[in-house]
Amino acid sequence: MSADMERGHAYEPLARQVFERINDVVVEQVGWAEKDNGLIGISPDGLIGTTEAFEAKCPSRKTHMRYLINPMGMVEDYPWQTVQYFNVFEQLEKLNFVSFRPENEAKSICHVIIDRDTKIKVSAKINMKVSELIEMVLVREAELLQCINEDVERLTAF
Image 1 (tube, rainbow, N blue to C red):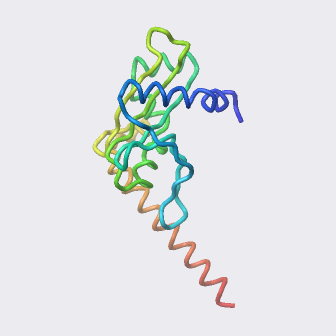
Image 2: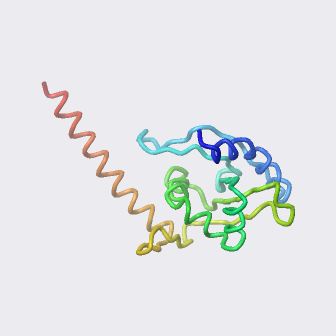
């Protein structure tokens, strides 16, 4: 586990508590969640009811300051994780993406809300809505399932 991952693991509970207090919500901790096909999953930092999710990052000072200046930078640093939330939780309407750094007394938390209409810059050439990115993922997912099924048929034909 990297130092950044250790930091995130240590501060995520506090980030969740601060977010809950500021937004007057309860963030339910859940473990691994996956689609019915068993191939695609995510480990969410939390769910708020059935239509919202919570994702916390607890970055370095430099990265947190960058997120304060450009909150969408959080999402642009983790575009496919963002898309995966909406892919796995089909009823999801909003993803609350948070950067939390308790040492930053001026502004310890940065919060951006993502929905399916939010455009995400995935690369220098790709800037698409979450819903469009989900469609791309679903095509790849279907191709993967087809390949797996074909392999299973070949292997069980003997």
